[in-house]
Amino acid sequence: METPTQSASPPKPKPRGRKQRSRQHREPFASDREAVRAVLSADAFREVEELRRQYPKGIEHDIFFWQAARVQLVRRALRHPNGALRLMRAKIGAVGAMLTLTSSEIDALLAQVNFHGFVAGALANQCILEFQRDSRLDGLWTEPTLRANPPLRVEFEHAVVLGTINDAGDIAKHKSWGKLIALQPLAVDDRLYPRNITYMLKATSKLRMRWEFRDNFRQLLGPKRSLVSVRRACCDARPTLQWLTNKRAMYAPRHGPADDPGRSSMQWERSPISASTQISDGTAFSGCERDKTRRAACLSIRVST
Image 1 (spheres, rainbow, N blue to C red):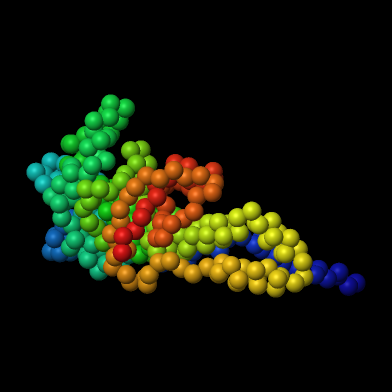
Image 2: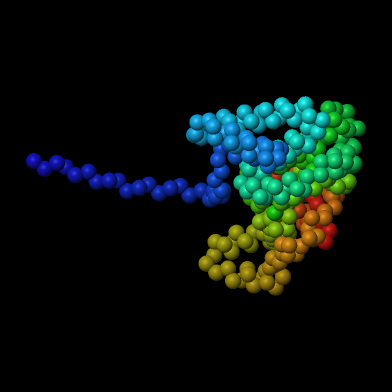
């Protein structure tokens, strides 16, 4: 008697969605390990690694060991006279490992740490001085808090974050801003939000290019925006393209090359935002959220070249 054959069902097509960014794989204890390595000297860190080899192997033991080492390091730093600097170095190591930086890249960031310069820049910032005088923000921007954990300019390949190193790491882990490349003190005229993380997109940011193209395209079309929908439904879009060419509506990037050093110099100014606002030359937008009603609460940044 023949047994009925079972035919395998064809595989179901995977739903089409946003392509996930591939990140370099790091161990789950990499942040704790780099935090410990950033604080200790090379000889002391080798002794810690030698101590780890004396215990059983396994990923669970690694996670437990390095977490305990980081907790012990923080406790000792709180009792140390120069504990704030040690904690900042530990935070840089942990954030760098979270952003999949190599040990050599983290060492390059640690070499840029100027803790006293970071504190001086935060205390001299005009926005922070205004926040300290505001009674509604009492307790948020106190001098002891700034001396223990000062905000600074955290520069990525395609963006600049104005905030603490932990703030920059929390917001950058979900962004495509490239690698963390520099740490600098706040400038006197850097504009910060009192309760939000402030960031600025560089001219090399793909998201900024998309915003600029869309806003310029809308402004150039003006009341004739409906032509886009009408022509898209037609089989021949050449008349519309010819009209755009005659009106010189072809998009041309207004920013310079990607390696322009002048892009890191920015001047802030408040400007009213409306549905018909035209983006001027070299304008980007900052803020931790993009308002759907045309960025009504955002600040415009005019980049000086």
